[in-house]
Image (cartoon, rainbow, N blue to C red; front, side, top):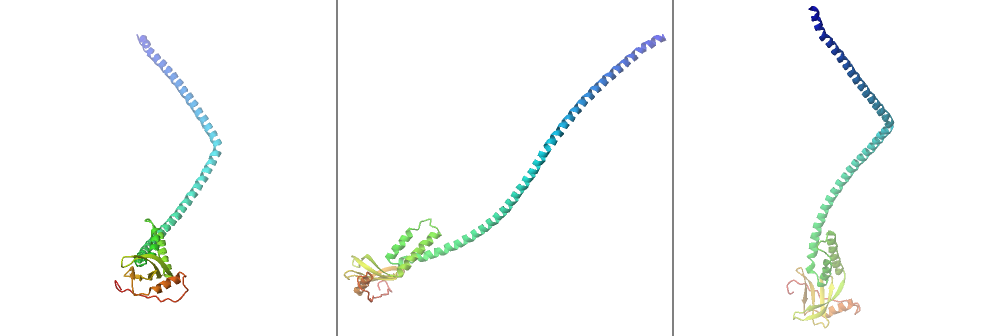
Length: 260
């Protein structure tokens, strides 16, 4: 009976021993495969590393040269930037200076325009006191002035008017015109000017004669019967070189009233 029991209990022990043996063999095979796989992976990595190292050694000189070129290009660009900044600073300084000059010139121009406006007003105020022949000259100059004329054009026209006035005042002048007489007739007369301030006139037969000058800011012609028209005719003839030069006495009448 004792022997049988031992036999019965020996079977599980053998089975367990076989199982342990099989498990150990399987684990060993698995570790061997893992080690082999890791070894192959390490070999591949080593090869890739070697390839990369070889590629780096081949590419290193070109890359270092490229780096040097990039550094040189960067330095050049930095110089350009610095010069550009310096130029910008100079340009800004010049711009500020020009703006200051422009402001000053605009202020001066404003003063010139205001002064010119006063001069133009003063010159134009003389218009009505001038004889018709001179006003016609001024009208021609004024016609050259457009609505959008600038200061220079206005000044040029004003100077042209003053020049015409100066020339008129610096010489004698005979002008032919048709005048309306007090009795309503139109007669052809010759007007003898001594500058723009005074003039005499007479018709061919001496029936009508008179003087002209500025009265209260307006040019006026006055017919008179108590004036020797022959003196005016002689002065006109001498001026037109139809008579030899000679002394001529012309009457001078100063108007102090509407009809004097």
